[in-house]
Amino acid sequence: MVTYVFVAAYRSDAWSLLGDASRRAIIERLSQSPCSVAELADDMPISRPAVSQHLKLLREAGIVRHEPHGRQRVYSIDAARLARYRRQLDQFWSDALGNLATGSEQERGIK
Image (cartoon, rainbow, N blue to C red; front, side, top):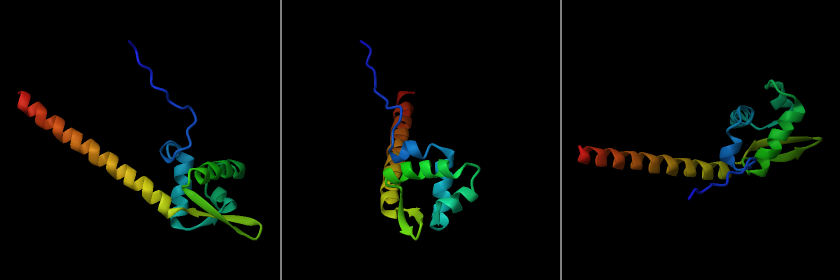
């Protein structure tokens, strides 16, 4: 019997969103200081509308937030939410390295 695993084509969680190079570049830029869409677009090889679309996805995932400043919105990283993703990544690596060590020990026991 074959079992199929459902994989969503368009996911909006942080891990799938950060797979895009433009969104990673936006996060890297925002880690330096908050800025507007125009400031982000000036530093990137994509258009302002494209930057806005990326920011919308990042905001919906809770990675960035914005505050109105006059006619502009200033974007910044949501440090608390990003810390949650960091904990998930740390747990993933801890589990992966633990499984690797267990597998290595079992392999040595077989030989």
